[in-house]
Length: 183
Image 1 (cartoon, helix red, strand yellow):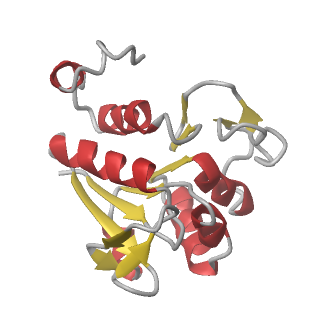
Image 2: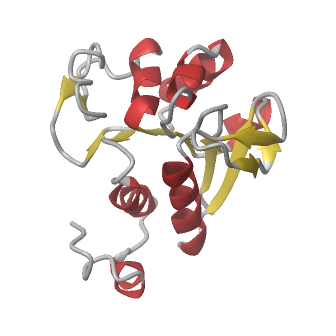
């Protein structure tokens, strides 16, 4: 079974993070949230959410890490040397790395997007150094999945689910995703 680790740093974007976790769990993917300092993490909109686990070497046993955005959540992830090291470990071991919104900046600092197509929040084309910026909702290149922002966690999570060879057609129907105009 696929295992996904979602990082929650102070100021994480609640809508992005919780939607991703919800959809992955609905798809039957083992998904855990990880925090860095406390088991309860305050989000960008002051929601206090309990993480499933504390960050540590056990993350290396997962198949994918997810870096949500948020202010200052994305910046806090980017400024954490343990996160940078883990992103580099996943890249070196050809494991999946997914990031959205300001979480994509971690990829640039970790230097794992060189020569790869990526997307990110509005105005990030210059900030995602080394990557080839594409103005799409979700971009998947080799082992990297990126997405744009707070309105895009559904297509982002669906791409993650599809990467693990699971069909999202029925889930999209049950969630009325296609009815709501999702791509």
